[in-house]
Amino acid sequence: MDKGSGKVTVFFKPPFWVGVFERRWDGTVSVCRVTFGAEPKDEALYEFLLKHYDSRTFSPTVKVKQEIVRRNPKRIQREVHQQIQQIGIGTKSQQALQLQREQVKVERKARSRQRREEEKERKFLLKQQKRKEKHRGR
Image 1 (cartoon, helix red, strand yellow):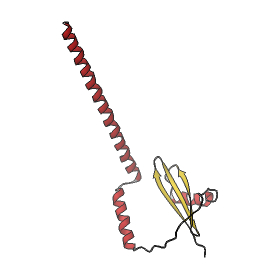
Image 2: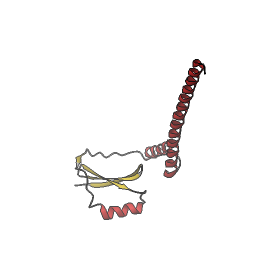
Image 3: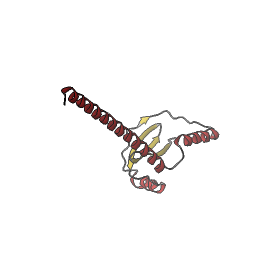
């Protein structure tokens, strides 16, 4: 008996939201990648599936070993809880803002370090110039 299934994974890959459509059929897998602009809502994703799924070009099929894995629901719940703890509390926009703050901080440190080095070099050259002037008797 042939058995088929599909799976959609949506994730944020800066600066866009990306959807990966995976279809399994009779021991083979093929995938398709779609780039969305803004974060797609469930309704928009469902509508996209209904209208554009047939027109998408999927990768060549790859044979996979089908495994039916029965997992303890409590273990799954613990793993989900651990993943949430690793990601942190806050919305995606809050996490994006935090990432932007960190990038600005790194850039600011680099600029200030460069300015400090330039100022140090300027002062050194000024000292050297004064020494030469004193040596010449001016």
